Image (cartoon, rainbow, N blue to C red; front, top):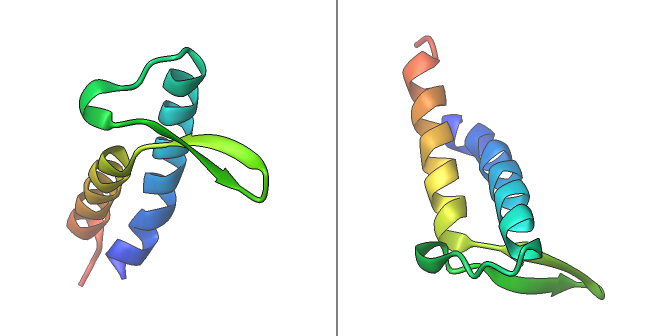
Length: 67
């Protein structure tokens, strides 16, 4: 359950950071920023950043959840 909850913060983190860096013309180096399009709406995305952000959020949710 913690992983499912972690997908949303991982998405928001990636969307904001990639959007700011991509709009400045930065390719992100290890972040591998690329421009994606959904139904003619362009946005910047980074899969490594998404996986890192989701993993971090998952760890925080997993460590703070009561069992």
